[in-house]
Image (cartoon, rainbow, N blue to C red):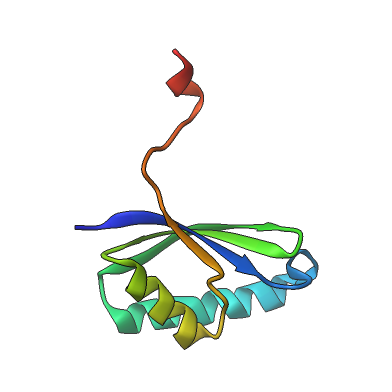
Length: 91
């Protein structure tokens, strides 16, 4: 069963990375995901200061750690998503 996760990556200067640098990291990530098969998917990421927050769907946390190792990125904190809130949750 697939689970949604939030990954917090501490990357000094993340918000100062160029479009080209971000594209290179994204490409390397996509290549690793393709090699790992359908049990892990990258949905989106948010760059904020010295952190990158990524949303993934995976069978387990170990797949996320393996992906981080293959790409050479930190995965400082991995948290399973238990609930999703949005403006429609208010009423």
